[in-house]
Image (cartoon, rainbow, N blue to C red; front, side, top):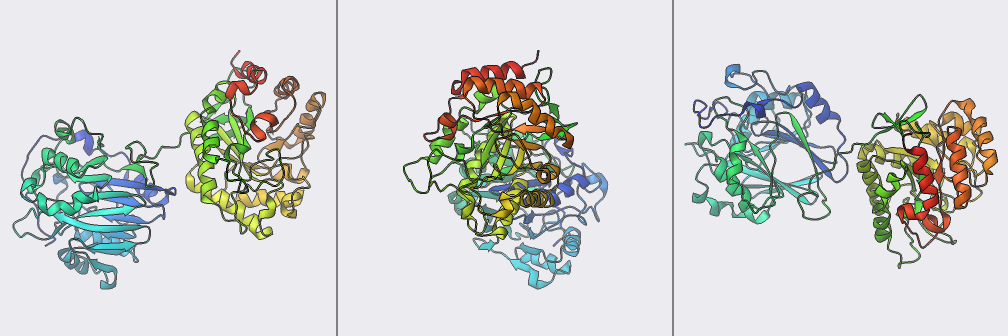
Length: 603
């Protein structure tokens, strides 16, 4: 069965060769497939050519569909790209699904190699594909036969087999698959025959499922659906995203994917997305709502870094040509993600949205970093219970989602986030030293998994504060240990911890930190240059991320800090910090923000 060649000699429409080019080389594709960490709530589609693609879930499981990677036994002249697009001997795989037993959908040489390099992979397909799996020496214990309307469950996803009309004289089993991952459904049509209206009643199960994403053949060759019927099927199933397949492999059995455009419904919100060979698409598996735009995962773009002790965003020095060049002006907004377990009347989501709506305005007036904290800050009253941590150091999803929203919006706007972990009055929630370390590990791994590059980590706020119960947080030695632990967990992450309001930092902490976090709350303006000078011996950038002086004195502290090469951070107790929290952008303090803009604008 694997030797059937499906009418490869016919030419049906002219081909646009641009879609046969590769976005990534074989090595680049394999590296990204192997090493990309799929963030929680997302899925990545790795498209190769023909109907060959891989889906990677947020459990880091790799699902292949119809892998046709090897060129063995087929003359190179038949392909747009004579060499293998992707080396089958290099690809990782956990599951391999084949829709039917045609050569380019269950390819003996490819599955044989994939089995050899993935000895735990499970191979799934109809009965005819099973014969090829066995010929490829795949042990029967790792083969699953799937039939029409069968549903199977695997770690992190479910799959349902739906109808495909056979395209050959032998009428071998043709299936399509619907993968349910999170809250979205991804449909792959495999091959299904031209003449959709004649068998549409057999596809009611598919239509009723209403998949969000549909990968549908469009080539019209070998009795497959053509552009018009592919567009009709996409409309019938009411998908949000239509991705064409089966058009860029064989030179004499392909089609220009743009030929689908005239047949797309004019009043539909469906998006038609042409993927080049060896390209990648990231989608949200838990979109905020059913709209198309929420299906697409927003790509992260902002990276915070240091070069010669100067702050850079996206590789460019901050505030070029200004008095504050290379500094990082910031504002303390720790209670923007606040919650109150003791008082249900507080609406944490409305509070968050109020803050996020003003981010562009804060940035307009010079702010390039926002301090938030996973245990918030003092809300102006005692007894608040506000923590992203469980007693064992595990993280609470609802709290993380609010932090994620801030980080993503800052990323979109080109700003950084100073993410604090522990706060006095709240560390008591954690059971012991091991829980504290586990909390740091979980936060650092979350940052890494989410792919955030605009985050600076603050282990603890004012670590010498007597409000901390755990010695590993409340002592210089303990904080130094936690900073080192964070570095070991995620090398390259910029980490520090802040001292008290006297503008000083313990030697043990300064040595381990990537940048020096200080507070100027209790530091007179005239003492600020002296405090900064005392820290220069460490040869690291100095960042004040908390100063709660009155408005006029804050302006003087801001100027003194900038004049002495120190980044400065505003803290408005009665406005942003104490309940009820208010975020008015520039109108929080016109005096301070006007001066900040003056100092950060190019001369």
